[in-house]
Image (cartoon, rainbow, N blue to C red; front, side, top):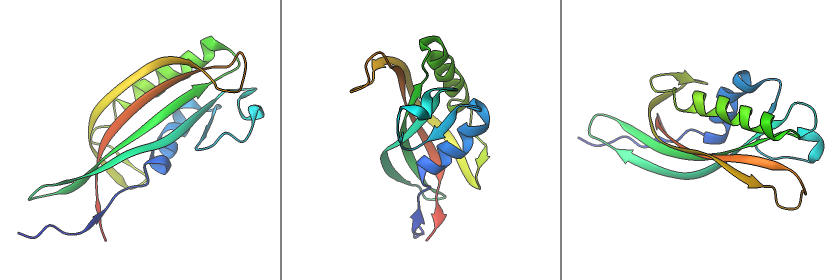
Length: 138
């Protein structure tokens, strides 16, 4: 049986759409324009990573990975954002987000505390996530 050509979701858009109501009033962005983006309520930056097709006889899906960076002027608040993100991104199996079906959560590695290059005294928490997302016909 031929497998249809399937396109993947834009994982940055998908994660941004899903995370925004969870971490509000923090911003959810794909690029920090400047330090003002994090000064008041913190920010969550989503960055796309690997995308791998999974071609099965009955279904076609994509394993989509992304990184999440949580920032706040307060290290405690940055960690709180990281915990909210972790709770959400690991619990989306079976949900439809922005009309994309999340088949499974394949991996999560998170809570890595890092300093932000070029910004003295700013701590961020980084996590990596992989979701299996059903593709859509081309």
